[in-house]
Image (tube, rainbow, N blue to C red; front, top):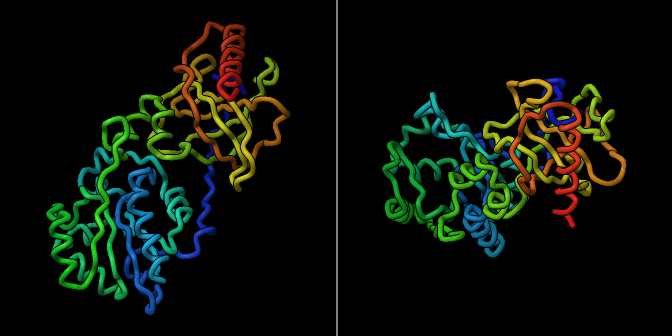
Length: 332
């Protein structure tokens, strides 16, 4: 299917959580963590699991290994904005399943996903440490970013966290914000870069390639008739990157070696003006080993141009050829 053709709207994303040996839904569920080993707990939303987050997460992992303890990441779902401004919640860089796998991949022994509901949001700042200690009695240290806020009304800051934690024998490690090009790295900055198509900047701030996972759906095979067969993946995220043509790397979701590709992410205005964006991926080089039903991982590497409507098939074919050549040159 070429840039612009519609296809099946069915969507199925892989849930790879079987790779996570310790996943807990809620703080109370994590009370089964080892009672004979100190717990080093990194706390945050961790959307994107970017370079700034890794300073917090790495500190917890290293301390746990040094002390023979357990490292765990405490994160939240949904984002607090769903509770406080449901009419305009924050659109996330990562789905929960991808974030959990990323946290595990950084060496976390456990991941705790705490529902951010009215009951949790109502906990007073002074009560957070006692609440954690009731369910996590071996809590030895908490690791957060220096701008982390907590408790009802976000009253708690690092100074209060240190004061309250000291009362319970809990150490606090506050990681300073990391700057890139003179500005702090943050999930908000990455979201803005994604929306603008600045994928090179996104990947620099993440510390790895922005990636999505989806299942190939059948198309009308029009792309084959003009010399550019494509794989079609519906879009299922909440934060869509800028519509346009990208250089990409494609692999099976189980982590097999990636294949270079050029892809269009858009609404296919040449053939129809769809209401839902999708990925149309053309592999470079050898014959395509993938087909409908295959679960693929897509790494977004470089933005080539915005999506646009063409006058007809011949103009579309010429544009795809130019996109392919640009992608080949980028990999070279």
